[in-house]
Image: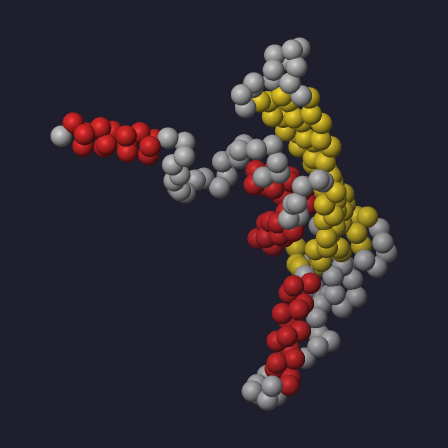
Amino acid sequence: MKTICLTLSFAAALCLAPACSSVKYDDPDRAETLTIDFGSTDLQTLANAMTNSFLQSPALQFLDQSGKGDDKRIIMYVGKVENRTSEHIDTQGITDSIRVKLLQSGRFRFTADDAGQDQIGDQVRFQQGSGRVDPAQARAFGKQIGADVIMYGTLRSIEKGRGRSIETGGTKKEDVYYQFVLNAVNIDTGEIMWADEKDIRKVERRGLFG
């Protein structure tokens, strides 16, 4: 009996040990601080800051162009955000979040991005050439709306660190600074109609045994 109890106690101790793993759902808006690397909180911070700036800009209230009719909302194409950091960051995740929020505001219209254009092309070619679609209902190229403005930007970082020493009490420190710049440019004139930047600084300290 004593052997069984010891075995059960040992098994329970193992389940409480750091080697055991578990999975649970968590709040997606909770600040993520597992590492100093670019994370979900950084993505949300940048996307929210730029969305608010877009919505508050007088220059982006409306834009009249030939052929737009009565709807003067700005039609936007989402371009690329260049990643100039040392990390592998999916910058499209930032612009996707911005686009969703701006669409939901009702203030902007968007043309399809490259992935969407590929899907459109495949579908139009299918409707036109497969023989399976009623010709009266088959869609054709040449009827898409044209974007007024293109959104593009840059994400860059500066990283610095200080190793362990007697002066620092054996503490190691890492510092990373992110700068995110976004632009909205009038496609006809090349004018930068709006630009903004958002900065993030993160500091990580590790003790002697960290």
